[in-house]
Image (cartoon, rainbow, N blue to C red; front, side):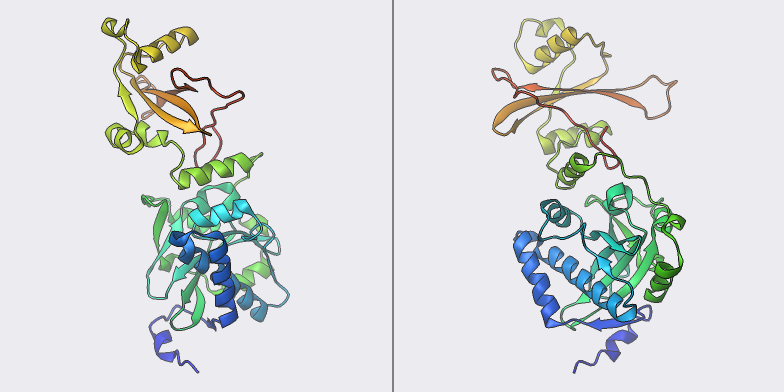
Length: 334
């Protein structure tokens, strides 16, 4: 039998551990192999194993409570599978009337928690309680490292900068609640005491858009807007365009084509505006997206700007019937 007493001395904040069962490990591995490519197998494995551990812990500690997986059945939901691949957390779980989010942690020694931005900023993924569960395959143990409430977590990240991987690095010490505290709140609080952001309707397209943003498959116009023109132009193959001039009037190039489009739609663009375009394909059809942005006058609130986006077919092609341009950020469809 494994003696973990020496290991547990190193983790005084850990209130209890559970032994990982071989059956749990195999089940998590089977699910990971079903829905993940090689690069994402470990993350999916830890997510599923952390969920199994939490379900086991809750059943043993308070049999009257149970985890409802209805909104997060990874093997039965294509959307849930896509979410699991890009957000390293198990969202949309319910215990009673409370939403629960599980954040898996590889091992017990890390003093920080990698908190996905999406689970605290996107209404569909927010939860009343966030539970950090450590997994140590080598020792064959798992345990609750800490718990935090949504309202407190929002305050904790308010002064943090999100990383390039769309996560916050949050000290584990911010997850001050224990498993006992969680059980008490689940039975004594009402969900209204921890208000969550309202979920906009409809949300299906919005969630798919967010997944594309997290996968970096969407065109990142926002990065370009925040004065990172050269970096984005290189990364996403944006082509910067000169301002209109008489020398371009009789040439056929993207700059002149854009000028003609603006004349047709009758939009006045300041000379200082930054113009760019990107060619890409949708379902094999060549398309072109023009983006024009400029800062508003100084008397407007600092940092305000305007953007004009124009989507059409590349020269010599016809756009598909019914095509629409949808712009999404982390909070809504704009």
